[in-house]
Image (cartoon, helix red, strand yellow):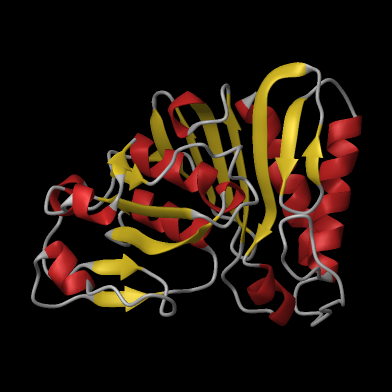
Length: 255
């Protein structure tokens, strides 16, 4: 199945590239609640065609919602994570696809994240995580931690949280790609405690981090049940930084 998911991601990217930079925001919302753009519609056309093309597990799509399938498990897809960036031509957007047997992170079997602009491919399975075919690991903590974290919502002192003197904090607009960068060792972690993430945003990325040796805590790992419900908080970090956290005070559990 992993090969099929990679091929699907490549097909979505190929179609989406023709719509990058069109600046085509529409007056309607996707199933997941986001503004629909031409790049979203193009990507969703590919996904819908793929679903109709054979027997599939149930597909949970950010754009179309639940597409019932005949095979066990769930495929969780955000065809364009970072569609605002893609729509404006800002080079930080991705295709995010995950397969879980039971709808939870604990039941995850495959994860695929494809950088729409660069074509860089991240895959995760039981044996580990790979970036363009090479095995990857989370970064060993040293120096100033670089954390992917939102710059809006409830203020959280990440310095106090991680017990460090200095933190570099970023938010590029595609949390799936941010998690992929953590798995690759480019960033030290993702911290989002607003309770506004959805399962479609994070499913593949969280699995990627875990398979690259990182540690993850959430307020729920019900990724399918919370696929469109903006209610998830999480931390995904290298083990050295993760061990500094007081999860109980954050209302999170390691998964």
